[in-house]
Length: 422
Image (tube, rainbow, N blue to C red; front, side):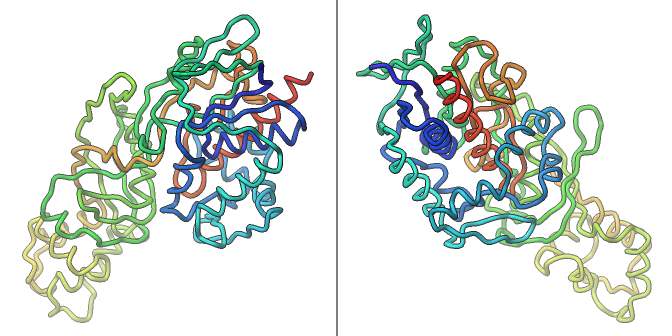
């Protein structure tokens, strides 16, 4: 038997691609191959199990969240399946949504499984064949057919979609297989790096404060060219350093400056200094005036700093910059006042490594120049398509990466279905 379409990968992209293809061309012979014993294992844990499915910001604003090259590549996919169009696919099956801070969209149930259940329902309605526990070992192109080989089986297909995900959270099945398949089909893979991850900071005094959270910070570092890269958002002290939205989003930029390639075993992390602005809405002069003009000048400085920092952290902060915790504002020297102001605006910490195991997404992938952005078909191999995290594009937290997964998959599904029936 020869299939019209084989889709490798039963995650968010693979399921949506199969649905899109089946809806575009009913009756097309489609099979979805998944190495796990169930569909959507990684999708099940996204958003801490709540599934931040998309972002409701206007598309022009959304596209600005990605790099210039990535934005240009994604534009057609995003406009082909707009935010509301995506949500309506799920609403048609009775799943409603709510919008939280920063335009993040979640299912009203707050359960990723609700999203998975809708996708599985569509697959069933559309009679898409699903093969679970099908671990693809190799992919070849023989004349006009793709040969998809497992240990015990060979499947033939007129077209193929690689929706295998990246190389993070390997226990969910994202083990980088798709990169190997694509490489064997002449595609080039950019360096594969962990992204959207926490920072490891070897400072026991900091780690003792794990669980402390901060709102509305600005965190920055200087890249290899000396350019200052900064992100804003909330931060959390973790069991081994720092995490939270501002750190996770900054990690994408930081990893771009690292000699890292997980596919080739290169994991040489260069220690990097980051700088935290605890008072992004105040300049140095305003901070100075606040200290000088405070009415309660008998207050100890660590208590005054509670205006900007959590209580426990203010003591760590003062110890780190070398200012006596118990000195009162009236006895605070000009030198120590300047240390405090500079610390509030540019508190330095050294990132010793990144928390690879906590990386949400993969940076790098199939080079975009080798893919037609209007169809997601390979420019090198006829009948080969790509969708989702396997592509060399990723975004910040906030639903932007699932947007890539769903929209590229939807377009790839439409394109491959039209192609096999043309």
